Length: 135
Image (cartoon, rainbow, N blue to C red; front, top):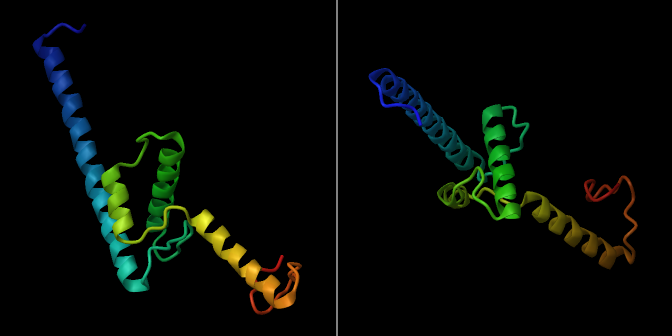
């Protein structure tokens, strides 16, 4: 244990003050980023922001980071990196938490529809009606 001397107490106070300052700064940055995301939802109608969002790269990075933290949180059943409060905030504005699964489900339904219409699931590489379904 570190002895309680005036010098040590000052050092501890300085470290605590710096740490609290960094937390407050990060909280302000998170609030600004969240507000940017809310503005984007209002402007574009959804919260689908790609990681390579050229109009606001930091916003794309924010959404990607939140999804990674959420994914890790779900897979490890822990509270790593994302709080329940943050999850609620992101859900409130429509951030999709499982975009890969949702995208896979949509493509699968498109393939089912294709098979019903054409009698097979061998989609041409350059399928004009739905290029993303082709290979």
